[in-house]
Each structure stands twice: as structure tokens, then as C-alpha cells.
Image 1: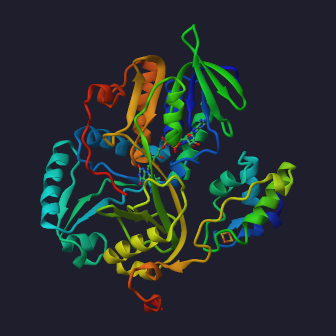
Image 2: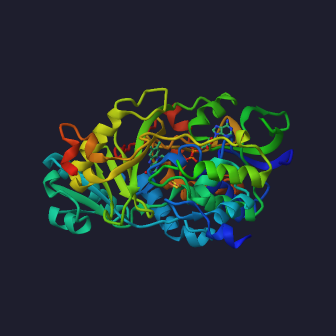
Image 3: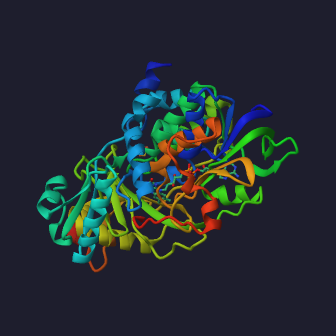
Length: 378
Length: 97
Ligand SMILES: Cc1cc2nc3c(=O)[nH]c(=O)nc-3n(C[C@H](O)[C@H](O)[C@H](O)COP(=O)(O)OP(=O)(O)OC[C@H]3O[C@@H](n4cnc5c(N)ncnc54)[C@H](O)[C@@H]3O)c2cc1C
Ligand code: FES
């Protein structure tokens, strides 16, 4: 660790590592990533690994369409297999009202270049032969959605960033942040102090606390979400399945991984519960009955960092020049990692991102310009 | 590197050799959590009951630390794998047998 960097990124999850990599790729190499535990130990290592562009808000659709394009080439780009697979997302709708709404969403997504479509039960069954077709009326399908393996993604970004000269420090906790009269920051860490011109707050569940150190009040709450993994099986499932808050997919290693809403969202612990398992099991087996015989292997929980409009905060803070946010993803920050990496690197290095994301700025809360997003899963 | 290390399987569930664990340690994965996830052992059906301690011993030896200095990852419930059908409400677990 040096005592001075051009940019310090707080958080060693997908956001922080992708931003570091993209900065270094642009020749902006005097960068440190500070992670208080191990890389991927935050939400990234706990997530469901799903990647989709089927959103309901135009901003989110455009960004995720771009992100999916990046995901497709990510293993080559990083020189490390992150196991991206375009398995598709299959949403299952079980009331006529939901099917009507889905038709509107599909039309809207198509208008923005995401060619999702409504499919009947027969076609859904061809895509996912294990489906119980009595459990839904119609499907909503997009074959470019997919998944990637979180820990491999973390490793790929970290190794590529290090090769380009980025310092990545683990077990380094940031406990204080100050601005200096010379318009720089002093970052106080458990491994010593660092002076820097720019600070990127990519601290996931810790981001509210980091912002508070500089007097910025990020309006977030932490929602607990539980998730489980089964024993590995031969590939049988196909797409990511989503029905209401239920979602699951089969990873490249064969484990079925997924979760659903549980009523302990406001809990302060992150314990795994029996209630979650019974709810998940009932919902999951209803759509794919053969899951009933599959052994459950692991169960864990993590946090969604939820903002008032379920959209992240991305970009600079007007009141604190040099302080950038990449947080508040509200449950879909893994899939956004690559595009956030690129756009935040552009903010820090060039002052302006190549896609206009001004509406994701923190100032929207003060102005009351909230964004709309209905497709929050889990 | 020894042929013995290449042939000795440390994690039987995931088919990971002692050598693969040592390689990962020498690539810099020097804490048990990162090592486990990078070298990909300890997440099989036995949930690491047979291999984590062995890997911890290798890590201790390779990095000149004691076992106590090497934190053990948390075991996550359920400890013994149970079929999902067991948790479905109003359903007998025996249905699936
Ligand atoms: C159960 C579950 C399922 C999910 N499923 C999906 C999904 O399918 N698809 C999807 O796109 N998203 C999903 N998400 C959301 C996704 O996990 C997150 O949005 C994403 O991982 C955020 O990445 P990040 O890098 O911003 O944050 P994190 O991965 O949380 O990284 C932040 C890091 O900052 C570190 N840190 C915090 N405070 C400090 C400090 N003071 N000093 C130093 N370091 C600090 C933490 O240790 C942590 O490692 C899911 C989340 C959960 C919990
Ligand atoms: S022997 Fe390693 S997980 Fe079972």
C-alpha cells in the first residue's frame, strides 16, 4: 500500500473491482481498491448470479442491454473464465392480469432493443422440459439474459486489474474519511492513512456508512434476502425461472441456486431460517415438481441495499467534488457490474460517461425526480 | 511439486488435489475463505466435513502459521443434505423415496 493514490475505491465486490479494472484499462493506473474482508465477501459472493435486461423502466433496460453485451465477451476480455451463459430468463405469469401487463412490458422492452416475447405453455415446456404447465398461463422469454459465476467474476476482474497495476488490498477497513483544504481526501484505514484526489464508494451494504463520513445521507435501507443451493445435478433446467418473487437457475457446476421473498426482510440478523425453506420449497416444486427429490445443500442470506426508487445511485456528489457513488442497486447490482465499471471509470477519468446516466445521480432524491422500476425480484 | 501431491485428492466431492490447493496458496490465496472459493473445494455434498480441515492444515504448513491462526469458514445449515420435498408444506417426505 502506498500513502497516495489518484483514486481510492472502497469495496472489493463486483462494483469496486470492475471500476478499478476499467480505470486501469484507460491508462488511469494509480488506483487502490480497499476491502475490509476478502474479495467478494459482500453481496457479490452471496448473490443469485442472474443477469437480465427484462426490466420495466427505460433507463434500466438500456443499461442492462449494454451490460449483457459486455457480459458476453467478459471471459475473453479478462482472460479468465467467468462462466457467463446466455441461459435466458423465463418469467411465468399465472393470472390474465399479469399476462396483460407482461404484454405491455414486452412491447416496451422491444421498443428499447430488448427482444423479449410472450410465449405459450407449449413453447415454455420446450425451453424448460421440467416445467409443470399447470402452474402458469403464459411465459415471458428473452434468450440473451443469463448468468455468470460470481466468484470467478471477482477473480477475473481482480487478476486483470492487478496485471494492469492496480493495488488491491484485502482486510483493510475504512473507518474515517475527511476532505482536506487542498481538495483531496484522507482515507483512514486499519492499515494506515491514504491521501487521494478521488474516492469511489462501492461499499455495498457499507456504502451508507461511508457516505455519512462525508456528511452525505444516502437514503437506503438494508433488506435481508435468503437463498439456497442444491446438490450438483446434471444440466436439466435450462433457463432462469422467475415466478412472482421466486427465482432459480442451474449453475455451470450443476447446483440449482435461488430464493424467494420471505417476511423477515427487516431482520437485523442474516441467519438462515426454516420458514424460508418451506416457502421456497413449496413455490419451487410447484413449477418444477422433480425438484422435490433434489437434495438441498446450503442456505445463506445477504442484503439488498434498497433505494427509494429501487435504482442505484451512480456518479459524483455535487457537494463533495471527487466523491463518487456506485451503490444502492436494490437487488440487481451483480448484473450491472460491467457497465457500472465502465461508466464510473469514465466519470473519474474523463469527467463524463459515454451513456447519459445523470438521472441516476444522488441529486434526484432532493429534487423528487424518482425513477420507476417494477421488476424487482426476490 | 510432487507426483504424490498431484495424485492425492484433498476434496473428494469436488475432485481437487493437494497440489491444486498448494498452487492456489502460492498464487496468493492465503486465507481459508478465498482459498476455498478460488480452488473450489469444500462446497460438495459433504459440505467440507472431510476436506476443510485438511486444506487448513496444508495452508498452515505452506504459510508457516498455526491452525488457530487460520479461521474456519462457517458451516451453513442444513448440515446433512435433505431433499427439497421434505420442506414442502403438507407433503410427506417419504413421497419422494
Ligand atoms: C440473496 C441475494 C441474491 C441476489 N441475486 C442477484 C442476482 O441474481 N443478480 C444481480 O444482479 N444481483 C443480485 N443480488 C444483488 C447483488 O448481490 C448486489 O447488488 C451486488 O453484488 C453489489 O455489488 P457491490 O460490489 O456493489 O457490493 P458488495 O459485493 O456488497 O461489495 C461491497 C464490499 O465493500 C466492503 N466494505 C463495506 N464497508 C467497507 C469499509 N468500511 N471498508 C472497506 N471495505 C468495506 C464489503 O466487505 C464488501 O465486500 C442479490 C443479492 C442477494 C443478497
Ligand atoms: S470432500 Fe470437499 S466438500 Fe466433500
